[in-house]
Image (cartoon, rainbow, N blue to C red; front, side, top):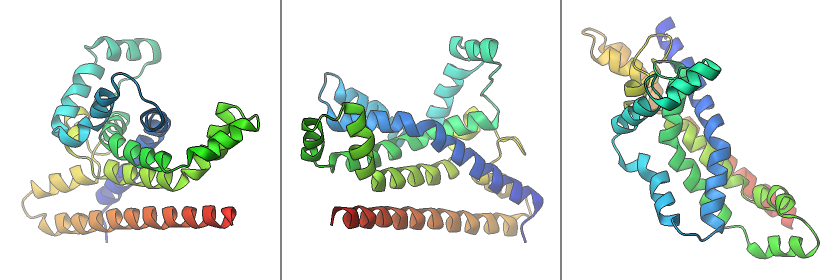
Length: 231
């Protein structure tokens, strides 16, 4: 049986993961569409910036967030003075850190899905008088649903497993920012808690596998529905 502290870490991880996906979803779709459908000066630079979290140490990302969103930064001071928002050392800050780390996975999955949409379908809708937004919302997005679902669930799985950026930006506060990886790290550092650490390790693997299986099932289901609609 899981202890109350372990349940707390699991539920907090889920809350952080959902919040992380929630705030990156629309920007991720917008940037994926920009990269998939447009050629412009600086495209390679934007693509590189989007994928930086995949190659930078997570601690670096956490430090950059702390510098840019901390109380001493102009942005952090502005958020606190105008809206009363203080992100460092809060679960919302953990969601921001997790979202930044998961962002490249979302953008990549959505971009590949958008690139797979036949532009002739959009051109045909345009010749029939449909505007850009109507084409985007009624043709492009529905045909990209498998990629959207895959990207969202991959981002959620990545947010659940985030450690380095979270502990740097949000710290390891019980009941506030101690997600599943941080709870496991805490148990590893505590003598005599090996059994509890092994339990959380197994649980982390199970949750990750269930998320990946759900991602694959939803993507296949969406593809089958699209094929049925086309036939």
